[in-house]
Image 1 (cartoon, rainbow, N blue to C red):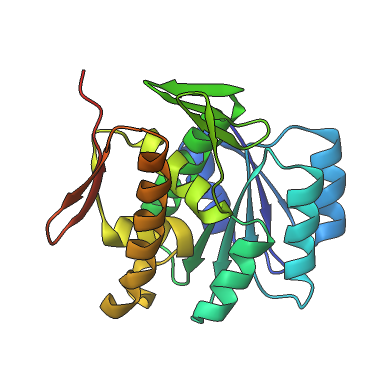
Image 2: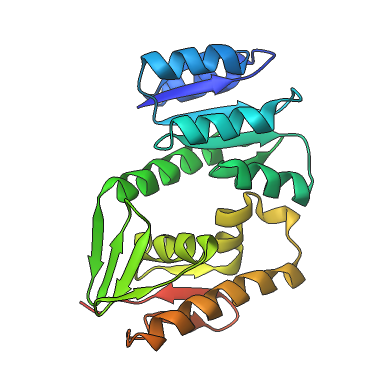
Length: 223
């Protein structure tokens, strides 16, 4: 798998570690060179070390022109608003420095798994049909109108079906870094799950989203 690392000041530790794990890693120090690399070669994931002032627009352009590529932000900025801006710009994940290299590897694998899932044109689970090409969801042949976050949450559940997902795992999926989220802020997860469940049930869907008391949720599909 091919990784593009964008960092203004080259740090060999990330490149050396990922290369030792079997990834092909290319480093550039600006977005202009990054666009040239991406245009001429296929990459599975782009890692952006945030330092320059144009990082947000750079991520937006990568996401717009190359939507199949996963994007991970690495930053010293421990700000919830900064994370949300990055994720809204098209990043898949946001890691706070100092990073743990094993965690970075796990995040890359998770993003590539999800991207591969989304590369399938349709996903069918019992009465649920997800067309990932146009982000359309149907239950019993009836269209379900989901918000962007509800759709992403459904895909996350489907990709982890029959696994118990803690509220912190779900928060990390949306916001990137668990330790920046206070317990009270998990209310936004409850709201998205409640709305997604309500819309699915309204179309006659089975109640696959099970609440695991004091832990989180499980998208339970019986064999």
